[in-house]
Length: 150
Image (spheres, helix red, strand yellow):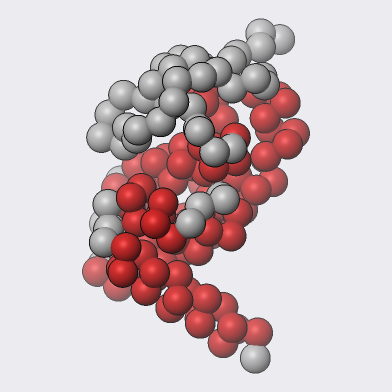
């Protein structure tokens, strides 16, 4: 099996500033280390097991097969961003009500924070939101999670 490795910057509107480097792992190695977390991030965002599996797999392939933006923080941080971009693209293919779109953003913020190694400032930057709105999404999402536990 051919081993793919990441190289440099990501084209498109989701391009983010950062250092140029190379992910030191193959897709298989990245999947072994981060696969469960990437699947969790995708599942939280898209709320569908099959779609989440597809999104997580495609994000790993994106990160290892061509021009990519490589993280200056951690592999998990960078890979979570690929999952987010893939989830946004997936959601763009369906018509969401304003309430569904709001819940998607809330789930995305929670997933990036809990499983993607992101701060609320980084979530705001990635989602093109004011920091106060990202913080509000996290606060409301965590409150909703607490309500489910009680």
